[in-house]
Every structure is written in C-alpha cells, then in structure tokens.
View: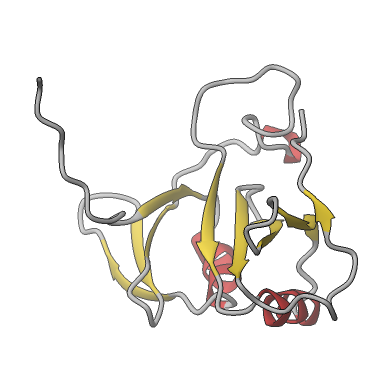
Length: 151
C-alpha cells in the first residue's frame, strides 16, 4: 500500500484580487492585517490574531462582469469555490456584517443537526467566503434555514 502524505493543517489560502487597498479594507473587518509583501510577486501576506494566513494575490486583470465564474454561471468549471472561516460567534458575525454593510448572500443556514450555522458573503472581487459558527445558542438569531445547494 502506498504511503499517504501527512497534512496537519492548512498553511494559507490564496485569494486573487484586483485592488489590494480595497481588499485590505474588506479583510481588515475580519481582523486581517498586512504581515509582509512578497519581493518578487504581487502577493500580500495577511494574518489575523489567530495566525490564520491569507495571501492576497493582487494581479487580477478582469472582473467577469461582476460575477464569480465558478459560482455565478450555469457551466460548472473546476476550481476552488469558496473558503470557509470558523468564527467565534455567528450571532456576533451577523451583527458585524450588518454594521459594515456587508451583504449576506446566503444564510444563515444550518447543516443538519450538527450545530453548524453559516452565512456566505462576497469580497469586493466576488470571492465567496463562508463564515461558520459551531455549537452556539441560535434561538435568538431567527431565519436560520436548512442549507439547500445552489445550482
């Protein structure tokens, strides 16, 4: 039997953006700050207080007409569709999204009876971000629906 590769955690997530300053303003709402810029590439390394690392790759040169080619068109292309970030409180997350006028594009949705509730948002470049909370009393949130895949 062939050996497997031991992967203890995700190192970072790369997200292509058009405008680094605009992306930084958005991701700052999630606690991300500039850690470093690559000397030889259009990459800004941002981290939050939990050491979650994103690489904002600021060389996008097309906007697909304000759509996300992996999520908003009928044809289904291979590729990464979204990143899911664990949040400490989905209730607090929803309140903060409202305070910053960030539109929830789907949710809050529950994934079965496991206590996971998510909301989905888009960054300024239409990249999809799932914000997932776990094991929280959600009775006061209201409007939590069972997740139904969007085709």
